[in-house]
Length: 350
Image 1: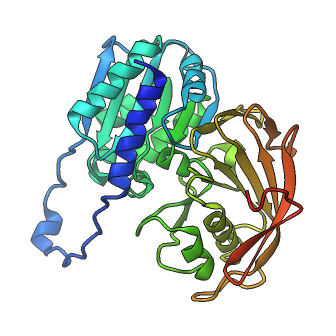
Image 2: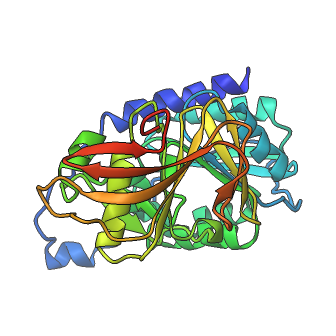
């Protein structure tokens, strides 16, 4: 079994659940009797292979920002190495038992670890369970699988699970995410609470109901002030990312916003000193906007200019502290009348 097979499985299941999302249905307020009833028991599931006893090895810090896709061997090897033979924990929602067990087996077969485990969340109540929180706390490495990032925000934000994840980060333990799992790593995120959104739709109406943004979920210091995006060129997401950045500025969340966008089958490997390396089969994009959009209103095409872009190819490096790269090229983006324009670029907006 190869790492390509592992991530192909991740990608296929992520695609299935991202396209089969159920809309939330409004319900009547509970009666006083129902409100006083005990909460539903936790419904999460836990699958583990390898040693039953937790490892006490010390991992090495680092973050793997994966753009989705099946060819993620370099990023996965990075996480394995940083785990230092300890316990590797996958967090996900909406998958069946057989698939979760299969992925555990595949990862254990190619990575020398004390254990590989998966927690499958069924709902928000799971994030209150002390046993689940303890499992998160003992893991050397945590990996957020692909799927639907709205589930992660709904299930984890403002719960003990969120606190446990931030303790993991503060302790200097490695962490990674692919596709939806990458979407939640920055200070700001596209939460996809209604559905995904495509670039033309977002550019035409920056306040459309599908442009749902969240913030302050994970506290990764190196990703403060940053929003991420995935499957980037493959799914033509530059336009929607520019809209996300414009909204963050327009809504007063910050006066300067940055973005890291990763192509499918590529990854950005981030060290704690802020240095990064792009690996895999595609580029990564590092964007910055430091002034408010000229026009950002509901049902009106976005108008913004002066967005700087660093395009870093595989093998290139980028320093988040200096916001400069050693390879690649730089250009500017602007948006008018619902269209993006690349200024100083020989390859369009990408």
